[in-house]
Image (cartoon, rainbow, N blue to C red; front, top):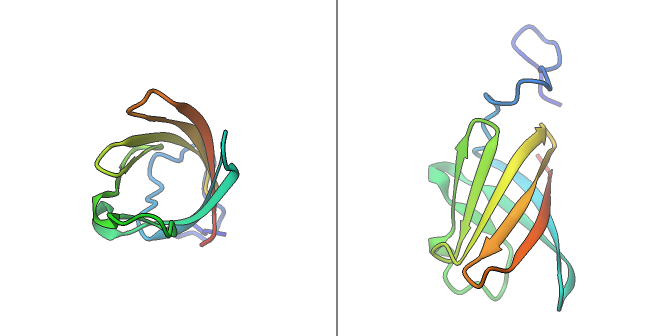
Length: 112
């Protein structure tokens, strides 16, 4: 739970000032071959995006951006782009698309 300086709960209707930098989340989506896929991810400082994919041999080319309550995640030099919307301080939902025009829905739930 995040408290405002006055000690009250933040306004869930105005998420445009919520900075996700330094936070960790669970990323969940469904893959047609793998079924449900779940990763722990981090929106690290300097717009570095980290996730626990063992097969990722190029972790240095994943990054993220935030524009108000919209979050963009770029994986493997923009091979896949995720566009999510902050629904609450604990939930981001959106659509992802890769260069092969495969499209899928995803959900991020906050860990910390």
